[in-house]
Amino acid sequence: MIKSNKLKTFIVIFLLSLVALFVFMNKKAHGNDSVEMILFYSPSCPHCHDAIAFLDKISPKYPDLTITKHNVATKTGVNYYMYYKNKLNIPGNGVPVAVFGDKYELGFGDEATSGKVYTDNIEELINNSKK
Image 1 (spheres, rainbow, N blue to C red):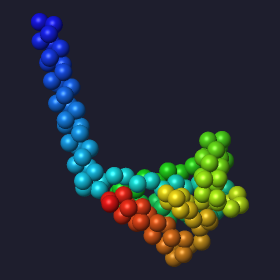
Image 2 (image 1 turned 135 degrees about the horizontal axis):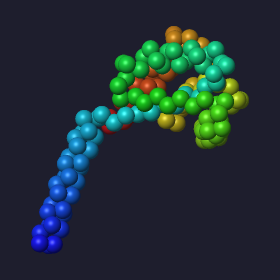
Image 3 (image 1 turned 180 degrees about the vertical axis):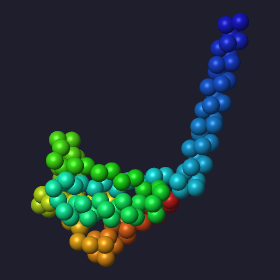
């Protein structure tokens, strides 16, 4: 009886593992992996509010995009900011800073200028994730 229960448990775990592997491989094959961009912002920064509004506006267009926002007025946010500032050699201490993999955009002008840089980098991230 004990051997029978162990065998059943093994079979169930094995089948669940196969299903999980199939789902994972199918997701990879269809390029449905989420890509991430990071936005460092300050609640008191008007340019940050413009960047956030722009990202909120375009995000429905990019279902595979995860936008992670870090408030630099918090300890956690400033720690992440300093990590990326050092990693990417970002000059100064200004925000907003949008990070797209190993690229960044410092500041936010308007939709025609900075917005175009954002969308170009987002599309590049998404396209590279499908390769």
